[in-house]
Structures are given as C-alpha cells and as structure tokens.
Length: 353
Ligand code: NAD
Ligand code: DAU
View (spheres, rainbow, N blue to C red):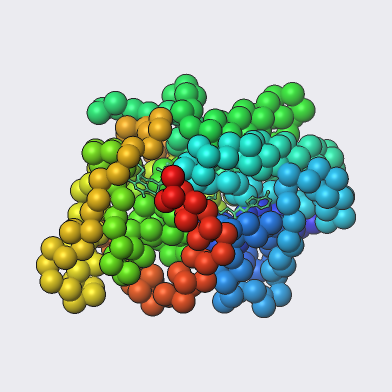
C-alpha cells in the first residue's frame, strides 16, 4: 500500500469553476499526491483555468467522459486511484430545464460509473475514499425562515437538483450496500474567479462591462447564500481528509442575499471600479420572465462542519466580491474565450424564443 503522502487522487471536473480551485489547492498543498484531473472539457470546462499549475510534476490532465462506462472501468483499472473527489457535472439549472437528459447522463450515470469502478479499488485499499461534491439545491426551497441542515429531507425541484439528489442517493446506497467508504458535502452558491458567465454574478459582471441588460428573473426576491469559491475548496480539503466516513457536511457562507439587493450592490461596485457615473449600471436591470420552478430561498446551516472540522469562511462577502470583480476586469480575455462557441450558440437560441 502507498504511504499517506504518496497518493494518486482523481479529481473529476477539475477544468471547471470549483474543480479548478480544488485542483490548484491540492497540487500546491500536497506535493506527495499525484493529482489526476479527469474532465470532458464541455462548454464549462477550460484548461486556461489551470495554466499556472499545468506543468507541476504532481499534476496530470486526462480528457475523458465520466458517462462512458467502459472508458471509466479501463481508466480505474489502469491507474488504481487512492481516492476520488467527484465534481464533474452539468451544473446550470437553466440548461437542465431545456435539456434534462444531459444532466441524467453526466450527473447520475457518470456518478454511478465512478462508484462501480471504485468498488474494486476500495476492496484493495482500506484508505480509499469516494467524495461526492453536491449542492444545497437537493433540499428544495425554504420559505422566508429556517435553514437547511444535514437532516433536511431531500425535495429537489429542478432537473439539475433532481440529478444531484439522485447521485447523492447512489453514493449513499453504495456505502450501505457494498460498504464503499464515502463522504458527501452539500454547498451553497459559490462565486469567485473562473466562474462561467452564465451564472448570476459573472454573467452580470460581464454584461455590465459590455453595457448589456441585466436579466433579473421574476421580481428578484429570491434568496441565495453566497460563498467565496476558495473557501469552498478549503472545506473540500478538510472534508476529504478529516470528514467521517458515511457522513454528509453542509457548507455555506452564512451570507444570504436577495438577488435584487445583490445585483444593486454589484452595480454600485462596478460603477466605482469602471469610473462610471453612480447609478449607470442599475439602469441596465431588466426584469424578465421567471425561471420555471424557481426555488424561493436557500440558506445553509454550516454548524456541523464548523463544530466538527473547524471550518469557517475566511473572507467576507465584501472582500470576496472585490477580489472577484478585480479578477474579471483583469481577465477579460478569459471572458471573451469562454463566451464564444457553444455558449454563444446556446444563448442566441434562448434569446430567440
Ligand atoms: P462547472 O459547470 O463550472 O464545471 C463542471 C466541470 O465538469 C467542467 O469542467 C466540465 O467540463 C466537466 N464535465 C461535465 N460533464 C462531464 C462529463 N460527462 N465527464 C467529465 N467531465 C465533465 O461546475 P461547478 O460550478 O464548478 O460545479 C462543480 C461541482 O460542484 C458540481 O458537481 C456542482 O453540482 C457542485 N456545486 C456547485 C456549486 C456552485 O455554486 N457552482 C455549489 C454547490 C455544488
Ligand atoms: O445553490 C447551489 C447551486 O448554485 C449550485 O448547485 C448550482 O450548480 C449553481 O449554478 C447555483 O444555482 P443557482 O440556480 O442558484 O445559480 P444561478 O447563478 O443560475 O442563479 C442564482 C439566482 O439568480 C437564482 O435565483 C436565479 C437568478 N438569476 C440567475 C441568472 C443566471 C437571475 O435572476 N438572472 C439570471 O440571468
């Protein structure tokens, strides 16, 4: 068996938003680990996110699709990973409404493929661990009060959250049925560098830069709990190493914002950064047709991970937003690259409807 410090760790979805921050953290922190980043490079995956670490001796990229059963079985028997941190997914709720099957394929079938391929490795290595990165959306919607706890019953409302709930259930079932050592975490809305500009914060930053409308769904009175992506990566590191086998941990920012208030704050910050007249970005706000099945409010009770593993967010929302806006202003080339191709075609089609 390999020593603790010499492990082959598979991270799936490492070319995406959160995955790239997790890959970087692991490559830079654990020199003895070899980090294998498996990613299909869909519209959301971009190797530019990892340019700074791609030459590291303890990092390799593998282009591959987790929904391809034979491929995954072959890869696992060749590489003999010591642990899996699984982030690869179709992640955008709006896309799940127009194309649910892609979400079933990647999020459900892809996860079950990884679980099946992990069984043999877990039999041979008592330290093997399967870690599924999941979302608070599996719990459904909250009213104006209350928080999601780890014990909150699942009640997913979108095809995306149903597919993530399904994959969580499969992970748990593989633990109960086959004894696969697993851990799951369910996190709230992330924001930060490398976030694909179809999600609220990066989309609106990009639109403000280009003086385009800011499409607020419905009346904007929907609430999300926002967490800086590097704080999520830190939590993932802790849960992978210290989380108890067979447990679930909720991760959140203790940071609830109504969409419309968040958008107004973003507009003010962007006006200041871009030296535009106060109030000019707010004029871009356009209320549009609501998202079907739109969850009213998400809010995480992150007491368990705080109490058991000592995790808490390291940056305030003000600091995190400042860092995020600065990153997007400095990386407009990245924005231009990722908004060409498939993304553009998808949104042009959406806008025509
Ligand atoms: P993302 O869309 O930015 O990245 C997903 C990555 O997975 C991309 O690099 C993509 O190429 C890859 N991928 C997609 N289908 C694949 C397939 N079939 N095979 C291999 N790779 C594939 O997503 P994200 O926002 O970074 O989310 C990462 C994970 O965290 C997801 O599982 C998501 O459900 C979960 N999560 C996200 C948030 C959030 O706020 N973004 C919050 C909680 C949980
Ligand atoms: O809660 C965790 C989840 O957060 C993750 O599991 C998902 O992968 C991630 O995409 C995110 O889901 P949301 O649907 O909450 O994120 P999104 O950025 O799409 O939307 C945030 C809120 O803003 C939501 O209430 C819908 C609204 N919205 C979104 C967009 C893209 C708008 O009003 N206008 C928009 O154009």
